[in-house]
Image (cartoon, rainbow, N blue to C red; front, side, top):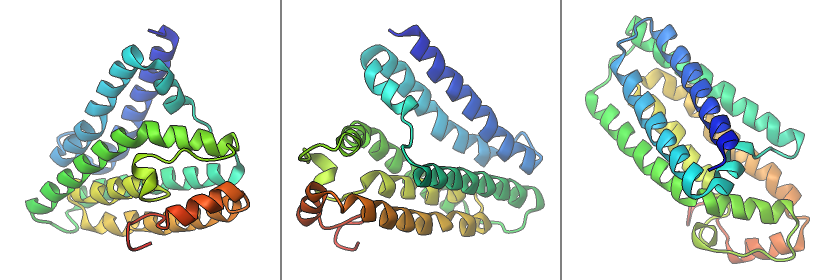
Length: 221
């Protein structure tokens, strides 16, 4: 086990845990916000398990996941915008809980939990494929090795994060914050459009788009 890598991963984990917790519970004004703890458990419990497993079984994959850097300015801008959107959405959910703006049925929370679990399973299962495919693009591979989900849609990780983002306001029982999180699909569509404009300059990527026609959702787009 690479102790330095494990320490870096754990440090980032706790930093993220603290930041997300503060956004939710400070805005809610209540440390006993049950939906908040459900969300924190859903997102951070499996994350910690994955860190522990990868640090022992596949440290190289863990290194790729925690140290992957966006290689151009526009990609970093999209990442920052997504983080800001998430932060605003979490704050709104807390305020919604504090001021009881709109009460929602428990079934929405159950639906949100179900969607999140499905999204998280998909995210974990395709992470290695995503990193391998990402490396092929960054290294300007002469031809792409197409396997798994990448033979169905061209941007599966965006599709999965879309499921995760939409499930968050449902888990936190905040229909009002759903308006904030629904901006994320717009960001995704714009990001894919701009990314593919650059990628289409590569002949091999153009060949890939002929084999895999759908960008985000099979049979739709």
